[in-house]
Length: 137
Image (cartoon, rainbow, N blue to C red; front, side):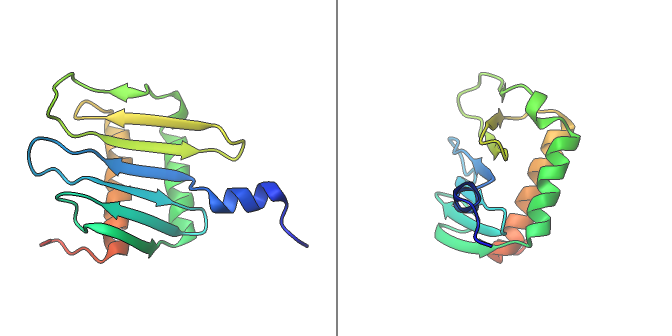
């Protein structure tokens, strides 16, 4: 049985986009597009753990676990922005695309809820591992 056009489109679009913005210092700046099948399209900019474009792979179960954790913390009900107003703070931005095509983006600096910060840290850890980043890099 062939996949429907909707299923084909879903396989081509990322289910999550995770990024860190630059600051006036040495904050890592990158964007990672995570797909349901485990593909990761990564682009690292200044001070990123890996600079340049890379393709990586995560276990699809890991992507599902990220999505489950986002549901558990009520990601769709979170504020769109947790910012302090300081101009030099880096932000972490997560966009999730849901099966119905809707999206939710949350941009957070240092004042984000602890559950959201935990989700960000989990994604970042798995992403670094997939990119081959070691603790001393």
